[in-house]
Amino acid sequence: MGSEGRIERALISVTDKTGIVEFAHALVENFGVEVISTGGTAKVLEEAGISVTPIEEFTGFPEMMDGRVKTLHPKVHGGLLARRDSKKHMAEAEEHGIKMIDLVCVNLYEFEKTVAQPDVTFEDAIEHIDIGGPSMLRSAAKNNDSVTVVCDPADYDAILEEMHVHGGATTKNTRRRLAAKVYTRTAAYDTAISMWLNTYLELQDEAIDPDDPFDIPSVFGMQLTKVQDLRYGENPHQTAAVFRFGSDFEQLGSSPNPLVGAEQIQGKELSYNNFLDADAAWNAVREFDEPAVVILKHQNPCGSAVADDVTTAYDRAFACDPKSAFGGIIAVNREVPLSLVEHFADVNKQFVEVLIAPSYTPEALERLSRRQNLRVLATGGAEGHAKLELRSVDGGMLVQCVDTVDEDPSEFTCPTSRKPTDQEMRDLLFAWNVVKTVKSNAILVAKDQAGIGMGPGQPNRVDSALLACERAEDACERMGVEPTGFVAASDAFFPFRDNVDVLAEHGVTAIIQPGGSVRDDESIKACDDHDIAMIFTGTRHFRH
Image 1 (cartoon, one colour):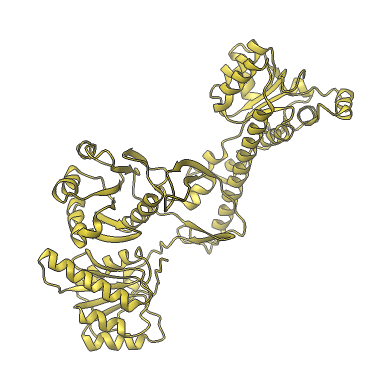
Image 2 (image 1 turned 180 degrees about the vertical axis):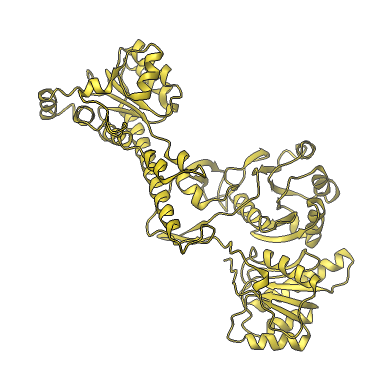
């Protein structure tokens, strides 16, 4: 190596061969760099007419053990780690015939892509754990005072441009930036392996069903990649950004069709609050197998309904609370047709911040394009849920399995004298799916499979019940229907009978709740006193 940062010898060994021929050709032809290479990379470069020194010729030792051992050699790592400003290091290198390596270009075996395949075997996954690649990257990155290290094809052009400017050398700032990028990549790579192996071991336990929540590992890491800076956070004086999970955590922590990663077809950039509300709405609408629409405002579903088609479901959801629907988020679990867009845009003239759905018909997209500021997101599907969710607290992170318990209504119990009618039971099951998405303490009043009254986030459950009933009565008055045939869902048990008394006073005829209070008998007696049917599910659904 000549002057600081000058590149005279490069070691190239890449899995992703995008742009590698052009990069190597420029190194050789423009700067006279000697290229050392391995296996498949060497073959690609040689076929392109680029002069290459095979790794076995450089080390004097053959590749062995199916390629597991080829670059783990003192002539490689000595050439990377030797400090050029140390007389001792350089004397030892000369004594042992170690030549300096000034640039390392390595990207790693595609472990994350391999384990993402549904039929991957344990043996195949293990073989895709790169050992030599991360070792070379780490050695080169550690010695960034002298060695340029590149792990991303996107950096090739910038490196060549800098070499042109600086007579075949790179700058210290560039080398340090590239070194930092290497450690970010190797950290993510190691985390991906750790997450996969821990999950694999969890699922080998015969007591664990892959579809059930599993033990949260005692240690895990994740890589977050910034998707975009946001204009501000919850308030204008707060800075904010949105990040996406790296592939190591994505399979564990995200659903198959997550919000972050959805295609934004049109509209302004999403704000911090848009992301929060869109996520809540998207999670809520995916609770249903039937065509469903959820209209959400400030983290709570102010309108929700199922129907034979999503346009009808939208109409019924909007009728629940048109005032709150203004400026809200619309989430749809089916393809959005033109008729749904016409109903909210032309008939109701509803101002909508975000519309999120799996897909849209061409006619719907054409009509949506007239509202240029409306944020339109397509997720590509509505299947599945995330497995883990995280929330930061001062000094740490709370991690829990997502509330996606698969409840079997046949296992619910009815402790009251009167049993629910078939219609009441349909409405109760609908309300039970919605109430889990309402902030606690949560009461939802439903009628004909639409959530017409919501009592969210009150400090006591009686106030939530009263608020939900008053909103349900207002909804019936707006819709011109009788305020009768109400059912109610509670996300947690009733601590006293006064909850039942309030609901009964406002025409609720059936209730669904977890049960489990020491005063369940009081609530059961209250239901019997008012001729109300009550279902116990056995599962609480708090949402704080």
